Length: 230
Image 1: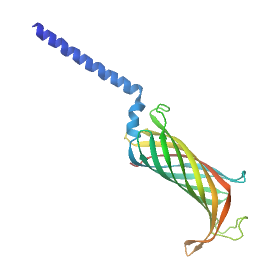
Image 2: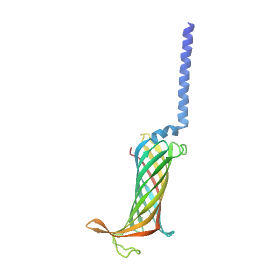
Image 3: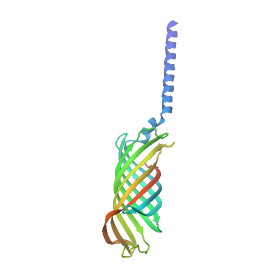
Image 4: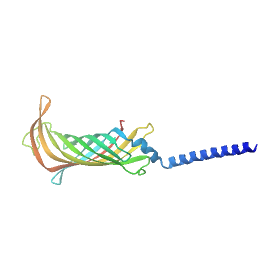
């Protein structure tokens, strides 16, 4: 009889310890949810993200303000997440804007890295920092109008050059296990080449090309939101 009582007591004690441990694990998870979300949001391997947003920029020549413009932008990031801190990325960004009644189509192609910032800055989010560099192409549609700085009338003018950028954002896991992100990016573009383009039977043909002195710059800010495709 005594042996049965001892075994019953030990079984009850074991059950109480198990319940206490489960309660402790639950409290830890509830108090620090970002620790458990990181592994689901920042996952090693290759991932593609896409987003849309707004952008605004200022065009400078010799440090003097010339023109301001604003519009929409769309971006795509292909990233290879090396570990729980670092990722390598190749990105593309397309923007559409209107400046002084001229339509502008800009494209940025870049490579860079992403670094995960310490968790806990935002509720249930994983913050990150990005730095990237690459090239830019900005096409101005003239629609038969002549710009004062050009001797001829072109259908479009294309500017090209290098670019640098930094970004800061956050990633969040939805109830459907989809990773969403928001991001604020700032870029600087140096315009070092220009091309005059004419249309020949609906085909754009470069008819003039020249080098610039690099004194023309375009500084832009982008605010985008989107999600991971996979």
